[in-house]
Image (cartoon, rainbow, N blue to C red; front, side, top):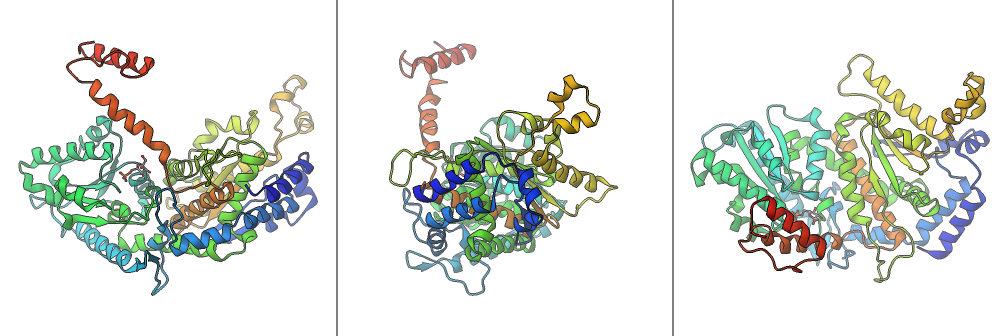
Length: 541
Ligand code: F6P
């Protein structure tokens, strides 16, 4: 981190250590307004933070001194900022809605190809939705099964659930990711092959889980329909790797392309979103892209102090690096966003879970936090106890909407009353004096007291729509980017996932070979586990 700018931040944190969120509100009747930003259909209220106006200025200065603006400009312009993989990082080009926009990678304007793939996706989605695209036996497609994992699963799975209100209900979408056959088997149990379309989504088209599931799905289909010829009517692919797609046996006419400058966890607005597009239709998909783009434009242009992703990033750094918080919770008060925390886990933790800086040295500051969460109000009856009264500091992002797509009775008012009340309870708590005034017996006062001073951000939009969802995703993408810049780490590679994959490849043959592996083939513990597994399965040990 920029030492000079960070040491000013640290000094101010120390100087204000004993000032509480309640103190800040008491001394500033305009605090809620001062610390509220609007962008792309979203309002961010960050007033309930341990944040003096002076500390805020210093944090903004940290962003400026770290070169956030300059680094963002490099990303948007197609510079190869993913240095360890020598790639541009251009998920923003996928949703660039500016008429006639040009974005260059290696001297080539990528926008015509981006638009062409979107058009092909739209034509295919329309055909499936309208019933023009028929299965091998002439039946309409009723089920779409996306087979992918990580970024090729979490984005479309999250967004398809999030936008279910906009979906064509006569087509059901399923997402199979785990190599555990149970995932595929339980999904296919109620499906008819003649009405099922598989989308094999994989950037590399070599991922073990996806290829294993895709092969088994293919067998299920061919067995069910009695002909290899059925595959071309029931399988589409989304990938950067045409050679692997065709060697798998999927007609490349049914392949939707994307490019190495789209990171897996940033790929929802690419062809990886095909299952989502089939579900909500091309027009809604484009509305989502527009929402992303509005947030991109806000991120590019708004001053740092009024820049929503920058502010969220700085607050994260305040608690991670200034207060030692290990994690943060994302708490959507909307059932449709149930998968949003899981989606963010990959986005954040695969991006910024790095212990080496851009110069290849061990980082001296802590980096990517642990992200977790559940939809409200479920979390309230599960883990909020720890957030309110536990010993750990857990900053939270609360996400809510003013209108529900399911306006039944007073459910929505109750939902949002809880959202607002939780942030107030966390910030202001309940003192011992208040407890006593309410007649709480003295021996129970310590247990019923809430310290408060627990920081939260509140993100509020009018309604969950494709556009507000797109903007919300872009908000977190850019937040994570800004943090990576400030921590001086590379956010767009993921070397940490490799070792386990390679070792799994070593272990695999030892689980089924006729002869047992030689003792010492692996480490002592792994040797013992393999032996136990083989024994249980009746293999020679
Ligand atoms: O193992 C991690 C990872 O490489 C992710 O970054 C990626 O989203 C996922 O695997 C799936 O990769 P692919 O789309 O190539 O199958």
